[in-house]
Amino acid sequence: MKSTIGFAMCGSFCTLSKALEQMKSLREQYEILPVFSQNVYETDTRFGKAEDLRKEVFSLSGKKPLHTIVEAEPIGPKGLVEVMAVCPCTGNTLSKIANGITDTSVTMAVKSSLRIGIPVVLCLATNDAMGASGPNLMKLFNTKNVYLVPLCQDDPQKKPFSLVSDFSLLGEAVEAAKEHRQLQPFYR
Ligand SMILES: Cc1cc2nc3c(=O)[nH]c(=O)nc-3n(C[C@H](O)[C@H](O)[C@H](O)COP(=O)(O)O)c2cc1C
Image 1 (tube, rainbow, N blue to C red):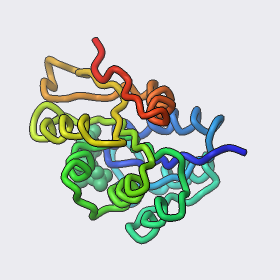
Image 2: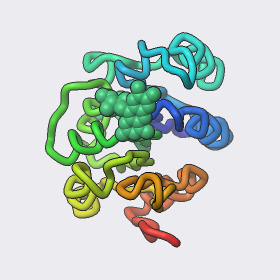
Image 3: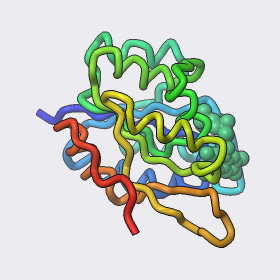
């Protein structure tokens, strides 16, 4: 029987399609438990409509995405997942996790996982990774059971403070996290 991976999605709207590709590929090995931040659940942007995303994730996972703190809370206590991935992870959610703030469905899913030692894998995409979110990113490298999908500068000229994880490495980062290993975090 397949084990289950939590797949939490935050409001990096331009990377949601890359995240869906990873959900598709993880599906071969895992059952998917989808979690949406409230922003992802209800916001239409130039990158797509919330309702379309909800439908697509339902068709991929067979489950309606959890999107409230109440729905996400049992993940740890009931042992619902083997690993919790946050893909994409915004600067906003990263910074909340680093500082113990639990006021969204995704931060609740992470907290609920960490409370029983379930590894958490963050696939980051944020323009301020080397700005306001920088100290929080570094803090998470030193946080037990939290792992980052390897990152690089996506556009050093136009977005000098931006870092984006290589989404194609999510699966590898998940397997490493299960062994409590961080992949080499920065690559050229
Ligand atoms: C079109 C659009 C694209 C965005 N892209 C990003 C992004 O790539 N990375 C990021 O950290 N925030 C991005 N944001 C900002 C987040 O959506 C915002 O910080 C939000 O509060 C995140 O909430 P969440 O982390 O709970 O999903 C974007 C916002 C919009 C409207």
